[in-house]
Amino acid sequence: MKRELAFFEGKIVPIEEAKISIKTNSFHYGTAVFEGIRAYWNDEEQQLYILAGKEHYERLLKNARAMFMDLPYSAEDLVEITARLLRESEVKEDIYIRPIVYFKDLKLTPKLIGYQPEIAIYLYPFGAYLDPQKGIRAKVSSWKRNDDNAIPSRYKIAGAYVNSALAKTEALMAGYDEAIMLNANGYVAEGSGENIFIVRNGKVITPSLNEHILEGITRALVIRILTEDMGVEVQERPIARSELYIADEVFMTGTAAEVTPIVEIDNRPIGDGQVGPITKQLQSIFFDAVRGKVEKYRELLTPVYK
Ligand code: PMP
Image (cartoon, rainbow, N blue to C red):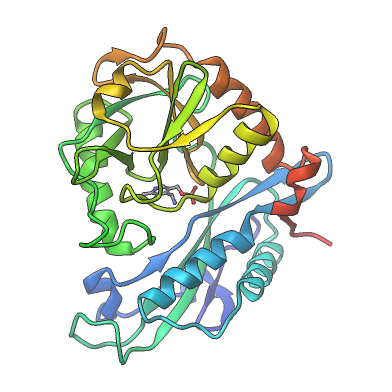
């Protein structure tokens, strides 16, 4: 990245100018919604590809509307603004894009109406978030996932990440890499920033979208790769904690986490404790797809440079 710029209050500006007041309403109450988007550099093509830009901005706009934050942009407008931000910043590496919608009002009441929503977008150079090669060790958290009727886990609400932060911190302090949270019903929900899948007898199982989880965009892509390209059956159903320990393979998905294998949970090796064959094949197709190397998935990519 040659220049550090941000989209702020309708304009692309140097990052130093993208500042909010300490009185900003959403800073106090977590009433912001955000996204995490990746763009991947393809060295052979000298091209940067935004992955699933339209899908991420559609999710953001829908989440924002549910929080009474109406923005004067379409998903297409926001993809175009992001492409411009990446071009003007001269990004030629893998990068993470963080759009955030917040109430800019300098007012005290925690509410969602009568305030002015604003969107900011900034960039963050980013390699692997966890360890997709070796896999990670995870801990079932003592913290329950937000109940959808308390702080909707379906939306990417800033304040909901207190729940993620508590679980991730507990896992890190206990010497693990990531947390697995159960929902209030006691079934497996998701990681602090990832959806979760298990493999049993050649079938892949993942919690359904009614299990108090985020509607992950990587989750949807991975289900497509498994069913359409690998001929693997995917079931969406509740998973009990006890089922994790006897799974053949477990992996997590997310924009940051990509496809990350879990090789150990609560001191029990998963399968033989190595990255399993379904996870490996899935990773190989996934990492080709995000860099534009799989024809059918190129429709998910927005080239940044003309
Ligand atoms: N669950 C949570 C709690 C997350 O923060 C994320 C990351 N956005 C995911 C799942 C994965 O979602 P996506 O694949 O859309 O990044």
